[in-house]
Length: 159
Image 1 (spheres, rainbow, N blue to C red):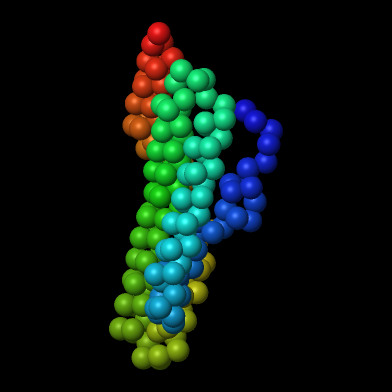
Image 2 (tube, rainbow, N blue to C red):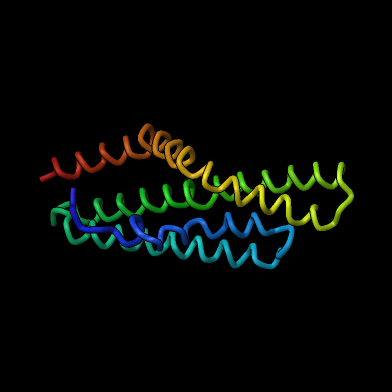
């Protein structure tokens, strides 16, 4: 394993992948912010995918370079899309929608109807990150990464 620091995963840039959770949290107050927040999150996913494919290209054995680059790109794209955008975005969307429904039906206060769901959505973000990351790792470790290892091992066995 490389000791080089990965600025996209080990630093503050990592939080760009969670921009859509902020957008979903602020949906009741600033609905126009949601679509741009997804654009930022997907731009982060694309940047990390490009970075990992480039690093794989630089370190892959020449005979299997294409397979290693494709494997790195697909793994990163799938993992980041699921763990950083789709699952957390959906989760925060549902937290905000459910809390808004409860507040709207029980407390007739327009300020609370907007701010309480937003605060609950923001508060849920740190609680969901690690469980979702672990879930996506588990799922990919038992599906796509198994298939990738088989393909890469057959590529390295080829003459």
